[in-house]
Image 1: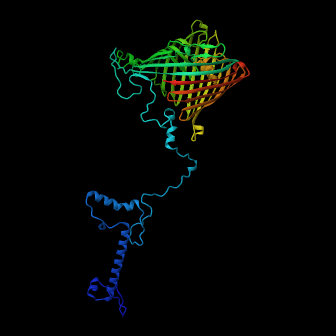
Image 2 (image 1 turned 120 degrees about the horizontal axis):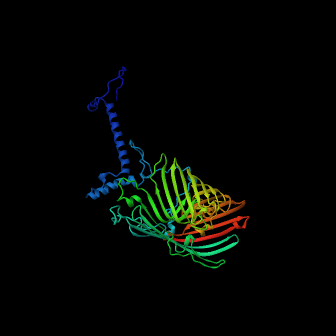
Amino acid sequence: MFGKRDRDGNVGRALLPVEVVTGKSARPTFVVLTACLLCLGTSSLLAQSTSQRLPPVWSMQPPTSDHNMHARARALLAPAVGRTVARPTASFSSAPPEFESSVGDFPHLPPDPNGATIDPLLPLDKELAGHAGSQLYDPAPSALPEDWIAPQPLTGATGFLDAGPIDVIPNPFVNGYAWEPRFVGYGSLQMFGVALEENNRRRDAIGHQLVLDLDLRLTGTERFHVQFRPLSENNSGGSYYRFSEPEGYIDNSTAEPDRYWVEAELHSLLGPWADPLAKLDYHCVAGKFPFALHNSLLMNDEILGVAINKNTVYVGDLSNMNIQMFAGLNDVDTFADSDARVYGVHASADYRRVFYEATYAFAEHDTDSTRDSHFAGFSRTKFYGPLSLAGRALFKWGDTGGRGDGQLFVLESNYTRLFEHHPLGIEYAVYHCNAFGATRGWNSIGGNFNRLRTSFEVNPLIGIAANAAPDDAWGIALGAQLFRHHEDESIVPEVAFQQVAGDAVWGLGLRYLSKTGSRAFVEVLASFNLADDPQYNREGVFAAYTVLF
């Protein structure tokens, strides 16, 4: 159509559409007719392809309402969403090709290269059944109900961890801090059985122990606390019936409270009368209260006295510094033949991520001044990630009329490890290693431990802290605390070695703790000692069932 050559070889000009109409050339007319036929054929094929995909709108009944209009619109879109689309036989459309699968399908992801080593997820019902001990509280259904409330202690006035406003009562004595009273009562009841053979002497018994704590809190810094152990006088461990000789019931019951004290802050007490700028941020406690120093190795006793501390002391690069001054006027168990009075000061602080402790104390004998003793202790604790190390050096001098001077050196360590795969249900473990050396004259300021349970402890350090060192001794204890099923169960195997005055003593121990309900647990202690000297031989089992309330 762009032109042709004549007989002379000259190229003619292109024919215009007007020339086709006027008939000036027959061949251009044939070309135009051929193009029209091709266009008609293409249109018919496109119509056929379109009719196979979407029905023509004019072939459907006209809508009679808005609802029908929306229904028809959804019907028009339905083939593209839910049905397989037929492939057209021919199409000249420039649209992208269509797939035979539905629009909502996606290709499958490639397999996980680590899939063989990854534990598959448990079904939801099994996961809920074994999570956080829920199977103990409500076994059917497996999950805790949505309205389940954790066991609460006996409360009065403001509820324990309760919602809502706090009942505020103006101070009836002075125009000071208002009272926010809250009373909480809680305790435990324990049934136990004992089977012990020590130094060729047999002791078998069953007994019970009751602990009742009453706490009245007036403000955030003032409270009264009383603890009763009506079946365990002087922390004996409980009252029990003994089957071995001499057979009979050992009654350790008492109506006297075992602990009682009052806590307060001087600013809260004396603020209405003191200068507003006076620094009275001193916390004090008075009564009969538990007091422990240097991880219970220097002192772990219940003293009748007073203690005052200040934890807002800033010196150089020291942080968290706390200074305590204490005075025990009675019931201090420093000496076996008499009560004692103790006076001392204790300081602790953090310095460059290291925790330091230092103590000085003076123990005064009730009747014999030659038994008066001085005590000093130094401790250093540092964390290295999951590993913690603590070194302690404890000294005693004086006591010229008794055991004389003595020292105790201790190295304590523990290491926490989490398990990626839980062998036998064990989720993590805390390993410990304690080494010590003690001289003959060493005894602590006061070691009022539970005397019944102490007989089943394998770690020699506990025996030395509760009683005087029998002689020059050194030893080591290795063990691990294994936690299973979200800490609902704990197992502590332990092995110990001690050399006392040249005699070797080996020990094996096992402690087992397991929850049996939301308020109850079972505890089992087993110990076995073997030595050349029969006085150190010991084997026994202590089993107890405790209910909390």
